Length: 74
Image: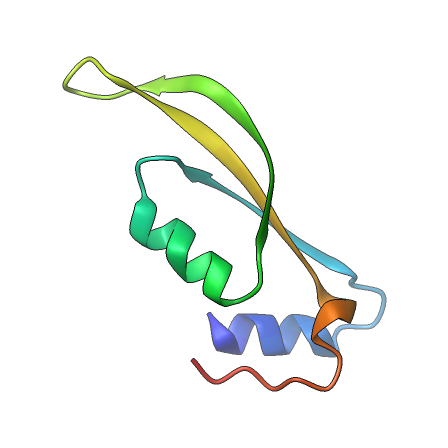
């Protein structure tokens, strides 16, 4: 993940990285937040799981200018 974010910072004209993650993927959400991603919104009950419950789709983004001067090495 750090390689990808550092690569993205070097790309001219790229300002924002966006991703989608299921709400039941708590480890993934935690990882993305460690890298500075913020939640932008949700689609509620977007996927039905095997056990019959539902999960949301969480939209997250990272504005690269917020990382100016930072080299990520997680």
